[in-house]
Amino acid sequence: MTETTYTVTGMTCEHCVNAVSEEVGQIEGVESVSVDLPTGLVTVVSLRELRDEDVRAAVDEAGYQVA
Image (cartoon, rainbow, N blue to C red; front, side, top):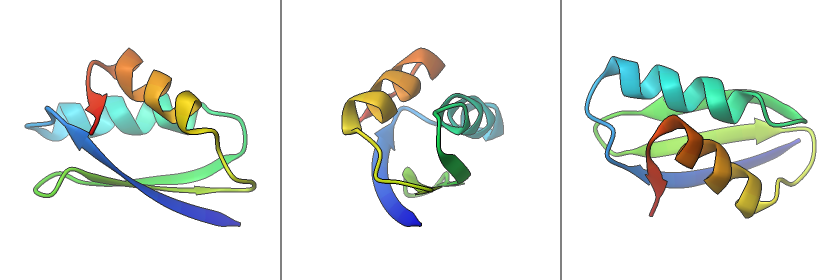
């Protein structure tokens, strides 16, 4: 298992949290996604190391950006 934390900008509400969690959660190998709204930290637990480009693309698809 691998745990990686990203800082995501632009999230302001629970809808934002759900959108980011859903998109990132669809990446192959992701086991769980935890979002801390006040800090913008998104922690991803996965079976293998993820490519940053894949996480960035998923966050972008949700409408936000990885800082």
